[in-house]
Image 1: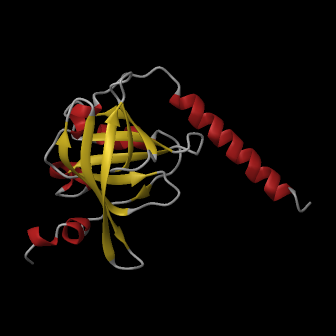
Image 2 (image 1 turned 90 degrees about the horizontal axis):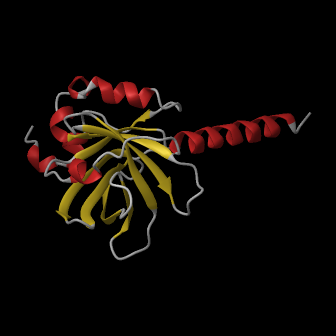
Length: 190
C-alpha cells in the first residue's frame, strides 16, 4: 500500500514526458526566431509551465548576427528582493530557423529554445525550452514584447494566450504590472 502513491506519481510523470516528447516532434511550421528576437524592445516571460518560475523575467537584446545573439536575461529574486542579470549568448540553429541554443556568455549551453508559436505581428510567441542535458523535462513560456504588455494582459494578442492555454500543463504567471517598475526603475518616476 505504501508504494501506490509513488507508483501513481511515476506513471503520471512517464505519461506526461511521453506526451511532451510526442507533441514536440510533430510537424510544425518553422517560425523565424531571429525576426522575433531582433528588437530593441524588452521581451517579457508572461507565463511559464516551468516548475520553478522566475518572476519579472525579461530579455533585452544587445547584438544580433546571422549566427549569434547576445542579450541580458534578468529576473527578480523575491527572497532577496534584488534583481539578477546574466549576459546570455544564443547560437541560432544551422538546420531550423525556429531554434537556438543558449547559455551564459563564455560558458556551456544550458538550454535549447524553440519558437513553438508566434502571432502574425511577431509581438508574442510561445517558446519550448529544453534544459541541458537534453532529456530533462521541457517547459513552455509565453513571451511578449514590451509594447504589447504595457497596459496589462489585454494588450497581448488573444491567439497567443489561447495557444499557450492549449499546450497542456497549467502555466504560472511570471509577469505582474509592477515588473516594469522593478526591472526598469529609472523609467518610472512615480
